[in-house]
Image 1 (cartoon, rainbow, N blue to C red):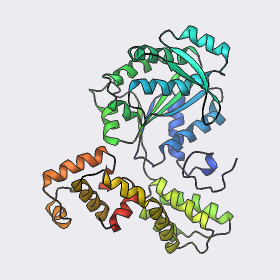
Image 2 (cartoon, rainbow, N blue to C red):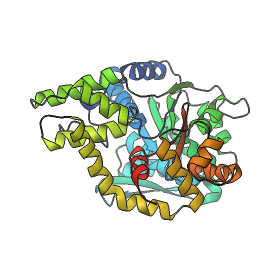
Image 3 (cartoon, helix red, strand yellow):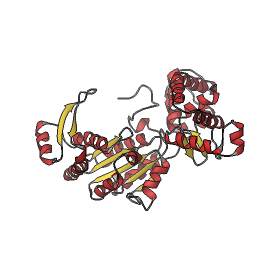
Image 4 (cartoon, one colour):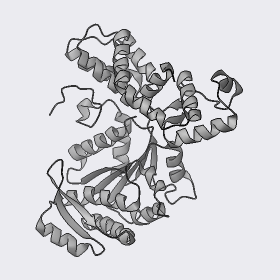
Length: 376
C-alpha cells in the first residue's frame, strides 16, 4: 500500500520511499551474502533502521526469498531475560507457523523453559513467549540459538541498539553471545548501535569478545544532491517546485540529519502551499517546536541547574568543540570547569548531547532549536 505522504517519518515501506543509501545497501548485502557479520554505527535518527529494512527487503526480493529475516530493537530491554524474551518473540514466531503441533515440537526441543502461544493484544496475531526462571536464562538463550541453527534456514538477525547489552546487570553477556554466535554457520548478524564510543569499543578493542568479528560501517549524512533529487521528484509529481536553494537551506539547518530533514519535508508536503520557500520551511519548524514545547519543558525539570545551563549554552552555540574553554564558560555564565565536566558526563549518558567529530551538539536538533530561543 502506497503511503499518502511519501516522506515517511516512521517505518519502512519500499525502496521507492527510501532515500539513496545505495552504496551502503549494496555493501551490506554483499557482506551478508559472503557470510560476514556487520556492525552498523550512527547517531540515532540517521536512518539505521530504515537501511536495515531496505537491505532485508532487497535480499528477500532479489537474492534469497526463502531465508528468514529478523529485526529486533533492544533499546527498551534492561536485562538478559528481557533480551531473551524479545529474541523468542521475533524468532520463534517467524521460523514456524505457530500451531499446537509446532508448540509440541518446541516443548520437546526446549528443556529449560515452556513455550506459550498467545494472541498479541494490539494486532490479534499469535505470538510466543517463553516461561523460564532467571537462573535458566543462559540455557534458554542457547536453546533459542540452537533452534535457529537446527532450522537449517539461512537466517539474518539485526539487533538494533546493541550497546544496550553493556547496561545489563548480568556480567559477561558480551562473551556469552559471542561464544554462541561464532558457531552458527547459517545465521548472520547485523549489530546496530547509536552510542558511537561504546560500539567502537565493543568491536575494535582487543580486550572485548567481539573484537574484529564484524565488518564495520559508519553511517553518515545522505549527500545533499542525492537527497534533493529524491525530495524534488515527489513535489514535482504534485506540480510543486522545491528549489535547490530552499532544500539546501532546510538541509543545512539540520546538518543533513535524516529524520529531521524528513520531518520538515513531511510538513512541507502536507501544507500544499506554493511557492515552497525558506519562510515556509521556518513555519513548519516552528509548528513542530510549538507542538513539542510541553515535552521540552518537562525534560528540563528532570535536570539540575548546571545541566540545564550547559545544555542551553551548547544549543546557543550550535556546536562547541572546547567545552572547558574559558571563553565559552564565561560567555554563558557557567560555573567551574569541574562542574561543567560533571554536567557534561550526565548529559552524554542521558543522550541529550552528542559528541560529533566537530564538537558537542544537542542530540535532538529540534530540542536544540527550542532551547536556543527559550527563556529559562
